[in-house]
Image (spheres, rainbow, N blue to C red):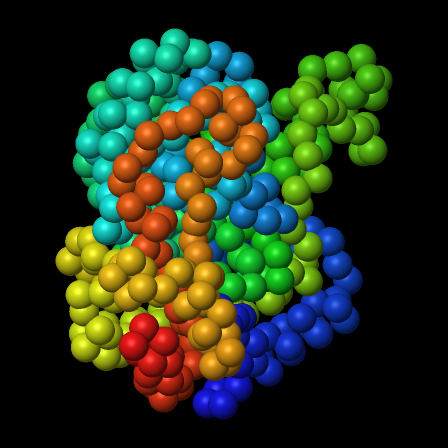
Length: 395
């Protein structure tokens, strides 16, 4: 990739992926068919989950999770403010209120302390009762789920892990400390379906509801029919065309075409993760020379995470340059960067709904964060190029 423009992220497609999609196109099914079921089984095995339910996007996955838990008006969902919009929006889609939690300023992660403070603030605001927590495994680093679960389960709250950045991390998606975990298959994520999402869970009842709600809320199993007079013929056998909708769902299905690509990518997950870890280790080593004005986000925990993003924290005041100016200079050098994320509580919709919130950890993280290029097709020399360019820009 040397001399080419380096985006902050990019999909990694090879001939096996192309062959898998071609085979799906030549098959009998294009929409939800056997490729989807096969992918879901492989995904469950890869994450250690009991059930995996695919859908059309990570956003759809978050919405389905909120629906499956029965969240709605009068309920409050705790969401860390440093995340993509969809994490918070999923709660609003079902009519629940959001309480934004602060994060650790050096990792961007929700902690037991910031969770507890958010709950205290929610109770003082009096807009409902806390019912669920949606921790976010930001950049691929995994929250302390055991500690968060200890807080949540004592209070009787459900937990949905937003693991869209963290596929391939140790124990991510096995749901040992949560009700569900949600993944994205967007092109810049660890594996891609083009567009797609997956929810994992250990609970059969939740999986059944997820499957139903991604397909318009339709029930096809005779033992679930409520209208016997129209469901069964005179012999008591279910009419072959019949289905029921006890409540409306959504068309959130994944197609066989997307599932074929995702399954092909999933078989290379270990290689993708290993390469991301190797690139991150090289960044860590080379950036040491730019400390203390530039440093990687603090690593949480002992195991190497399956990083989706490589984020550095830059003291822009100390270098005398704005973040936008640094990004423009790097772009002129052929290097793409991004900021993940503007804290969601600052968005106009949420400011209007909840007012101006003081979340200093999130503000400190956001003020310094910059995502550098990280994707498996990068060469070691590309990391060297990025670090050299960054060093030149900051002087």
